[in-house]
Each structure stands twice: as C-alpha cells, then as structure tokens.
Image 1: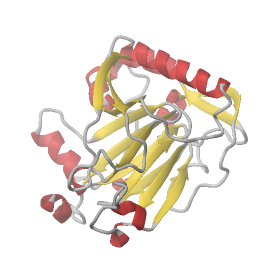
Image 2 (image 1 turned 180 degrees about the vertical axis):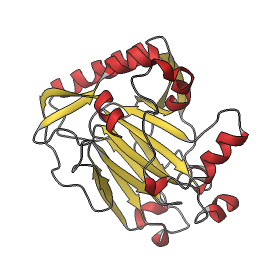
Image 3 (image 1 turned 90 degrees about the vertical axis):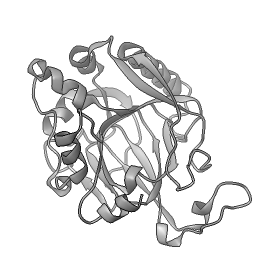
Length: 274
C-alpha cells in the first residue's frame, strides 16, 4: 500500500487524540513506509488526487443510512445487511459535503464524542479500482495497490475476473466522522479485509458461537446477548473479518479504506450454503 498511502494522504494541522498502539488482531504497517505520521498530527484525505485522477464530474454512490449501529433494523432474515438508500452525486459534490461536515463537526467541539449519527452520507461499495483500470495510463502508478499475501488466495474475485463482465468485490469506502455501517455479516458468508488508507474506525465484533436465535423484546436482536469486543483501527492498519461474524463499524474521523470480500477453500462451503 506504499504508493496509494502516499498519494491519498496529506497532513493536517488539526490536533486530535490518537491511539498509539494497534489493537490485537490488527495488521499494522507502523514499522514501514506505509505508516502515517505519529504523535498528534492528523492525516486527512488528499482530495486533489481524486479530483485529478477520478474526475470531479464522475458520479459516485453515496449511501444514506438512517439506522444507528446496534439497532439491527436493516438486517435481512439471515442477519445480512440490506441495502440502504443510495443517491448518485458528482465527486466534487461529495468532496464539498465531506469538507463542510468535518468543519462543522470539529468547530462544534464534538470531535471527542466519537459516536455515530443519523442521516450522514457514506460513499461505500465504490468500485474505484475497476473504474480506474480503464484509464491507468494517466495514473502516477498502477496498480494502485497489491493485495497482501495473507489474502491473495481468492476464488471469488478470480472467478469474476475471468468469467464476468468486470464485476468484483473490491471496494473503496469513504465516510466522514460519525458515518457508520450498522450491524451485519458480510455478503456470501465471505471473508473480508479492510485497510485504512486515511482515518480511524471503531469496529464492534459479535462472536457468533454465543449468539441466541431469538430477538430481544426491544427489537435489538440476538447480538446484545452475545460476547463482543471492540477494536480501534488507525491509519495504516488492516482488519480481517471472519466469515459470518456480525460487526458494526463507526468512522471516528473522516476515513478512506480499501475493502475486499473474498472466498477460499476454507469458507467456500459457507458461501455455498448462503
């Protein structure tokens, strides 16, 4: 991720509280050249790169999620996330929306609260690599990144690359402070991994072996009776999500991440059942 990290990040003078140590289970690049600046300096999104190489007039899929994490009201019968409202907007409009949101959020003094909020746009499931593959000659480097060796045995995306018309499960997520993905398990009972190019996320994992089959009276569902744990993911760290593990994700800062779903021989039976 060396090239993409240097191109998508820039430093900000804004001072924030940082978590100095990666959580257990997080793959960190803090010891190599991918790592973000330390101490209290914040790295922010280098929007100029996106304007130049993606194009201000390019349309992007922004999801509007009206459900707070923990409510579980946007899950289907199998516990997987259902689609939320999606609107297409120009990239330039999305950049302006994020900038305005971050300025208001930090000016209000709420940056220390770090909690999810309703009705915030979230650019997610963005097939950016697929889009840019058509114009890679104009990019400063290609490919943008190389999948880490841990995650390279990929039946799903290899199959789609050979036999589909360009589909894939390789996404970029870009969300402002307080945007979130509510409780869900990943599509096709796949594995997933997520690399934070810029920003900070809080992950809440619910261990499936301890979940109940019935819902609580308050409608929040089985996960509130299961064992759970939280992980803070900083810039330059990668999270692995096991198949069928329900999880919630909150962007504590404006965050851009690279996310892949993938299938191997170890979980193909779960995908077949799905």
